[in-house]
Image 1 (cartoon, rainbow, N blue to C red):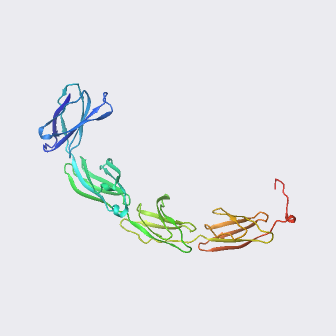
Image 2 (cartoon, one colour):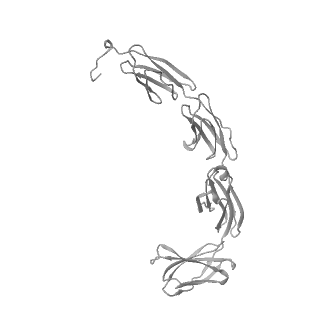
Image 3 (cartoon, rainbow, N blue to C red):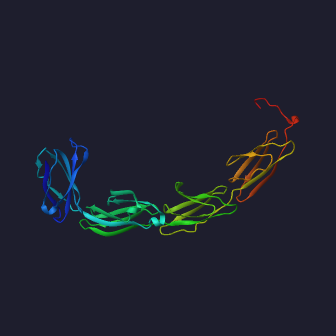
Length: 364
């Protein structure tokens, strides 16, 4: 069997090739099951014929560059030719453009980009998501019919989301457009450690409107320079974090086209707590130091040596030294400044002797 009919273009052109794709439907005319074949036809001939079709229901899809695609659904009896299936394709307004990015892989390594092509009423006509940078620059072709301002919205990693307006008059092709997705402003600087040896850490880039962490940039104690392309315009909050140092936060405002290469972050060291244990009598013993406050810490004590220095977040802490055979030693300390040493001196412990014991029942 087969299908035939006339083939025309609405503007009368005859120098265009039209592709007819014949797709077999299931026997009930429901879901599509696959292409039978695709075949080009010269419009100058004025007709087409798709032969050698088994009996069944088919969808014929007609397409040509610069014209809107159209389709016919035809029931083909076994061994018969269905005639009179005429098709005329309507002329579209053609928009051609080249899309590129300001940065390439040599600047930032691999990255992805996306775009959407919007009708003047805001509806999405075409969308591509997370395409690989290797397809840039990318040739774009859109077919439209209405007047108005169309919008190509494009964005990419390390770049700014940008809208490119395209003015269209129906019937007049628009060509030679070139759009470049602009890179995001570059933010950077150096971290300094006010005291101590420094430490590895991170700079968190936070959206202060909702406290979302947008980026995390690691740094080393021996290499504290950092930089990144801003993930958004407007307000950003940078917070540097490193072990045994107090978090340092700086707020910045990111503006299109303005790099900020000297955003400095200075980290003060956490307060240092020093404590030694002295035994007023008795042979001494191992024990524990309990530090309770903004963070809780339990430190093993060795009768033979002092407590290692502790670096703690700012705040007020209760200290308890508990050594078997000795009375508890308690104290409180207010660690209220960075880069400071708080020396509590020796915790003098007295042995628990028989004449000092109190016997308590299970209720205390």
